[in-house]
Amino acid sequence: MSLRAKLTLGTATAASLLLLAGTASAAEPGSPGIGDPYYPNAGNGGYDVAHYDIRLNYRPTDDNLSGTTTILAKTTQDLNRFNLDFLLKVSSVRVNNRVASFTQQGGELVVDPKGNLRKGTDVTIVVTYSDVPSSRSVDGFTAWKRTADGALAIDEPDVAPWWYPSNNHPTDKATYDVSVAVPDGVEAISNGTFEGTTKQINGWTRWRWRSAKPQASYLTFLAIGQYDVRQSTAPNGQPVVNAYALNLGAHDGAARASIERTPEVVEFLAESFGPYPFEAQGGVVVGPGQLGFALENQTRSTYSTAFFQRGANTYVVAHENGHQWFGDSVSVQRWRDIWLNEGFASYAEFLWSEHVGEGTAQENAQYTYDLYPADSPFWQVLPGDPGVDNQFHGAVYDRGALAVHALRVAVGDEAFFGILKQWQQAKRYGNATIEEFIALAERVSGKPLYDLFRTWLFTKGKPAAAPGAANFAVARTPVAEPKSFQKIRETHDLLGRHGH
Image 1 (cartoon, rainbow, N blue to C red):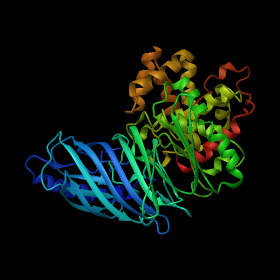
Image 2 (image 1 turned 135 degrees about the horizontal axis):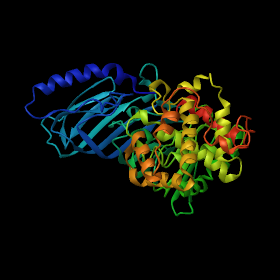
Image 3 (image 1 turned 30 degrees about the vertical axis):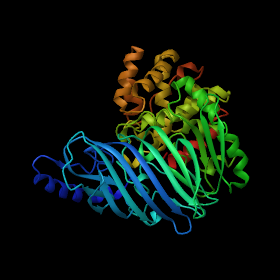
Image 4 (image 1 turned 90 degrees about the vertical axis):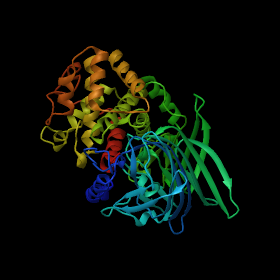
């Protein structure tokens, strides 16, 4: 699900920029990628974004998206050119109120500000555009999902290039204002707090949303269509916005019975992970067939109806809201650190299972371990560095959760939950690596943990026993399936299959 054009065409772009750099006396072009090993051309160099103001108009009848994104950034080097990640057709670019030259190729919007920008300069970039996002694909793939009544801008690790220009990598977080005008009777839902609607004279309504905490580009989403939007207040006083597609049919009750419990799930997870890091809560359930996965969009996770086919499913709510801490507040430094997202979100399901009395974390760990025979290809995927093709493999979820439980067993509950809370406090709104987590876990617990993590994250093959197996009277006898496990299994099958 990467922006494949950047992988295939980025080399030519980089080469042209290097030639230009050679002619400059001091200022140089910003790099067309940050050098992530999995996606070398994801993101851009030379600047850091502080804020995006995305002001759009969307017409569902022909999938036309038009408008302006204003980017507030600061240069991190002397720049004579810089890149933005974007696929839609641009009509104009201004840099600090001056018209700038630009070119577009392979998902890169290359901007020439017609003058050097000194390091440390505050920069205002205004990009105006209009296009049909569903017509833009990379190797046959598009992250923009046109629906019968609107569209969805939801995917991982790439979605931003299909609807707003950005520095598209989790290491450059920013705050957001998202404002979308749609025909009257259509809803437009995004992240953060709902700032209200404004009726326009042309029979359209503008919807406004604000994300006041740092947010990664792939976690910024848009859902447009026919929704029942419900607003309430969580026990901690935060606003809650939930939205349900009007065509959920028989799944409607189960979806609402799950998503309406989001504040309860958040309250429980805060006991284990520390204070909830954001300013709002909620969820969106999209129409049948519109989405094949769930995604932890910051403050407003979005769910396929498939999770509710057999009734209410609070485990997927626990998983996606576990990501609000692990993935959203503390994000990956590089995409190979994905275990820090998926391993802990999956373990949030184990914790929720304990909380509701449907199976202890130990029982779920033992059952997961027993589920995969030693010769299964499952054990050949390394959660600590799965590779780009296996970034969302089931092993990253299930073996990833086993690695978390192995840590809990090794250090004991007091140290374990202390590690999780200190991690969240130390890395709040930032980025992190697996190695940094291991170092903190050793420091807090006072125990050497290298061998444990090497076994569960970085060694192919099935470990000799499940973490904590000695706690069972007969470790070799398969444990009965915990009551929670069918829901957890269904959740992980969907999440792993579709990549979130």
